[in-house]
Length: 274
Image 1 (cartoon, rainbow, N blue to C red):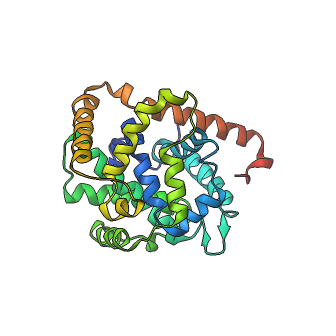
Image 2 (cartoon, one colour; image 1 turned 180 degrees about the vertical axis):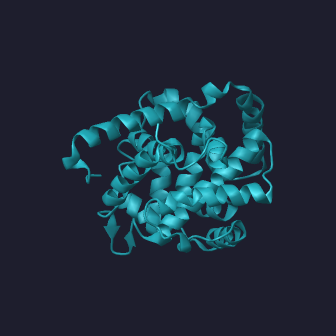
Image 3 (cartoon, rainbow, N blue to C red; image 1 turned 135 degrees about the vertical axis):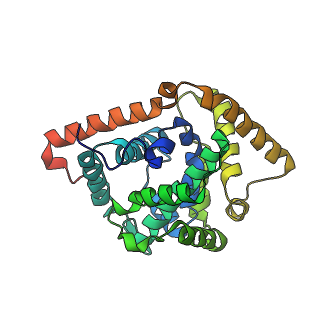
């Protein structure tokens, strides 16, 4: 198979192959929509509320394709997304705005580091964080963001990220999207309740305190203890699972995405559709 953007030993692959990171997706998503322009774009144009599973499939399909697919697959799918984003505009936002691309990429990096360290009970050193950060710039650059718009080093990223967390002011659109993400309409109805409760606890626990407070989520000593218990249980159980089990989500989402790309390749007339 054609060479991908990364090698198996690269941290971006070592970290993101872990299916457990999907459980932290709510935190990354709602950090992204804590940015008012991202929130308004999602609120106006996204199908998250109507079909959350398709939204998850498309998001994870793109991420896994960039991380593990061939260069051609990653660039083809990213070009389709960029083209689709051309219509995601409003009075004060454009989905292809580098400012927003930088923020989205930053949340994906920050939440992945935070959750991986908790689940695997390890602390990345500065060199590893620099390497992983450098690799995750691809989440913005492959969609057309000039690399110079990204914080150049991990140290500069830390300053940027802390400043954003400190100054972002979430909107009613942000809160509406949070309701959609945390209380999705899923097949199975009440059967999903325990899993969704765990996801809501993880999302709140991973969220930086200033953003969590703006969302209005209750957070006290009791919820902190439940969060630590949940993460501790994951840390004891999940890393002991066979790698082939932990990477099943990657296999599934890559399979479905490649099937979609094969259809696009056979029908070039629809290549520019989102």
